[in-house]
Image (tube, rainbow, N blue to C red):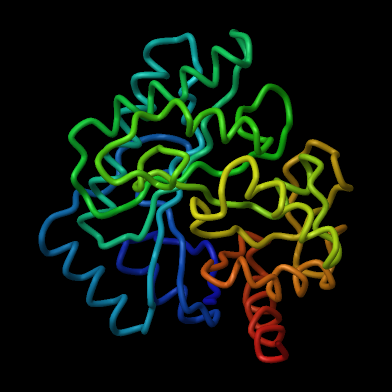
Length: 288
C-alpha cells in the first residue's frame, strides 16, 4: 500500500519525480502532455533516460499517467472521437517508453446519443485503440462523478463497457475481458455518484457492490480524494482528506479493507495541502 499525488511535470517530464519526492510521494501521477489538449514533449532516448534516472534518484516506486481531459469516446463529432482514440493509444505507447504502470482516462459524455449507445462507443473505441497493442502500460477506466451525461459513474456502466471489450488470450478474470484494461477508483467521484464511503460498514457494502458488478480483480489503483459535496451530489469537487464529506473515518475504513490492500493511492487534492494529505495517509497506515 503506497501513497502519492498528481504532480507537475512542467519544464520537462523528468521534473515530476523530484516534485513527487518533495511532498513525500512513494508513487506519483502526472500528465505526459497538456491536460487540455496539444502534443506532449518528444520522447527521445535522452528524455526517457533522464526521466527514468530521476525516478530512481528520487526513489519513486511506480508512476502513472493521467490522460488529457478532452477525451470523449462517445462524441458524435468524428474529429473528437478519432482524436480521443489516437491520443489514448499514444499515451499507452508513451507510458510504455517511460515505464508507467498505467494510463487512466475518463470515457466521455453521452450528450448526443442514448447512454447505451455511448457505452458501446466507449467499448468500440477501446477495442480500436488496443488493436495490436503490445506495450507494458495498462489502460484504466476511471470512475466518474456523475455530472451531466458522463459515462462510467456507476459500477454497472463500467461493467457494461468492460463486457464489450474484446478479450485476448489472457482474460482479466473469469468474466472475460482484457488483462490490460482495468479500473481506477476515485473516492470523490464514487461518493458524488452515490456510493457511500464514510465508515467501515459503508465501505464494505460499496466494494461488495463493485466486486459483484465489476470484479475487484480489475481494480488497480485509487484516486484518494475527500469530497466537497454530499453523497450523491453528482459534482466533481475534491477536498483535502478529512475536510470533506467522506472524512478520515472513511479513509481509515478503506485502508483497513483487506480487499484493497493491493492498491496504490494517489491524492488529487488542492496542491497546497497534498503534502499534508500524504502525511495523513502514512500516519493512518502506520496505525493499522
